[in-house]
Amino acid sequence: MRRLIRPKPLWAAKSPQNRLSERILIQSPTEGIPMTNLAGIVQQLQKERDQAARVVERLDVVLAALNGGSSGRTGHRRHLSAAGRARIVAAQRARWAKVRGDAGQKQNVVSMPKKRTMSAAARKRIAAAQRARWAKFRAAKKAA
Image 1 (cartoon, rainbow, N blue to C red):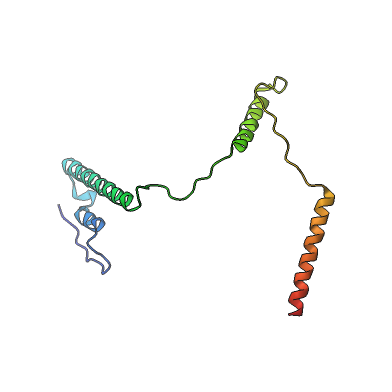
Image 2 (cartoon, helix red, strand yellow):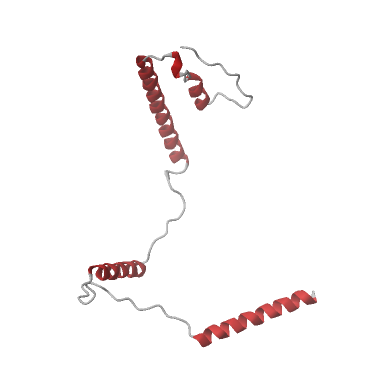
């Protein structure tokens, strides 16, 4: 078996990844690698993969110890309120009832109150107030 020798770049350090790539033999299929050698190479790669997995596992243990036992996902998770979950459940029950055609039988379907909508007059008042705020802002900007 021939091993390809390449000059190492300046940034190449002796990291486990670099050592792994040094040990992998690269040959072309035309040189006639016997299947026994190929099986040996595969077996060696599997051993190295298992060894790397053990190293990663030990690093996870060390990181968990340094982080105070919190390994995995950090940050806050979002939670649904009971009312929010009830709305989702009711909506899904209604969807299934509609699909099955049981709209007349309404079994276990809880109706939730509709969301409140704003009247047209209220929307107009808000829009007018916003236009007034922008006019005031533009006037102050123009004066400065």
